[in-house]
Length: 232
Image 1 (tube, rainbow, N blue to C red):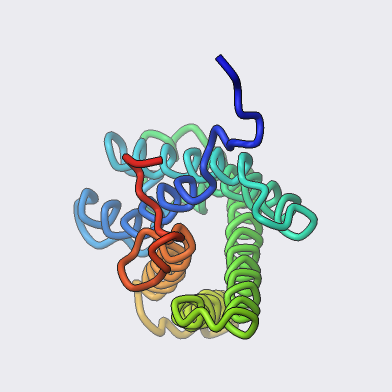
Image 2 (cartoon, rainbow, N blue to C red):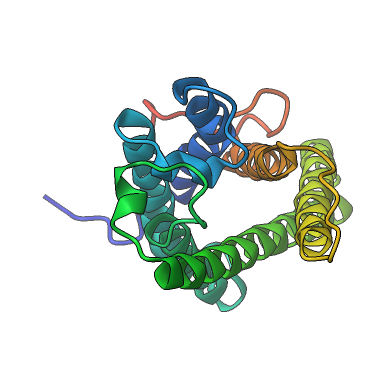
């Protein structure tokens, strides 16, 4: 039997599909499974049981796929993908500052809560900024393809990448602004769930951009470009 060494054993588009689906539904799923309204997706870490396992497990899954992803242009995408993977692990392993007194919080002293919280925030910001960078890379690639080949589907994808990248950046800017406001002598609570909604829109934008890049969405790829999971 002859082996085709030019054939990829792992389709990067399938990786994008899986990562995109996880990102798309993670915020809604953690909110649905948590009793009461969580103020941050990361707060689900402090709730015992299924919701914490889903939160940590999904982030580990995203990190695994990002570690494996090198992209079409490894010189641009491979390194930042690995950094994003480490950041995703940081979000999962270093819980945000405890506001919910679950069993996990009882085992973390106040000093470690502060340190873990800082590492959690840094990891989250780095991860989202890199995801926005991916949107820029995807946008530039799709735009170039449209200009070079007249591929109308590539033009459609470029709009989605642009919108997704802007959404992620705006979400992070609002989060940073909120953190600065909360550290004022007289902090103002803009919205109790502002952090959650910024994370929600950031993750949904990330998920949509990677689903689009996987080329599984209808009317977003030429017939020969489309991803068919059960076909080769």
